[in-house]
Length: 171
Image 1 (cartoon, rainbow, N blue to C red):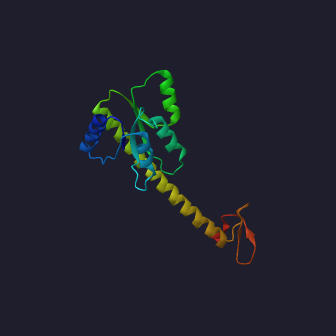
Image 2: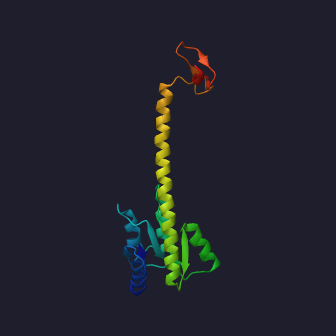
Image 3: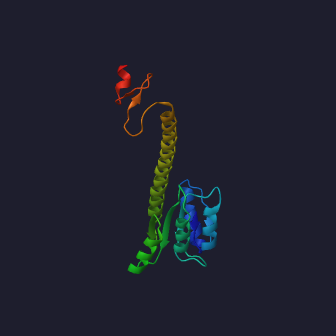
């Protein structure tokens, strides 16, 4: 998603990203920029101009970050505001990256690629977490079947005697 109030800049950003093979959703103000991530098929990466009418880019970032999700979008803030206080405010809002205006198309593409890489890693991590949860569920089910003491790790044999852990193989 590209969120920029200036139609010329928004069109230029979109053209650069489309030329690089990305699908682009455009928003012309902060309210639209906030609505887009709420959709079920929302883009996972957004470039947000700081200064937009209504809700500014920092407000959009804060709202998105307040909406807890397992797969948060990657947010890049674009701004001319580079005073120390502005930088602190921007970083506290929680974007993943930022780009100063005037921006370079190559730098924008590079930062988008970094964001895409981070999202890919995030997706892999979410998948691994899902796999671990499934494995833990299976372990829990096995603990209910196998006669193993969860505290001392002793194993109960067929005669109802408790053996030290690991002795089951030697029987």
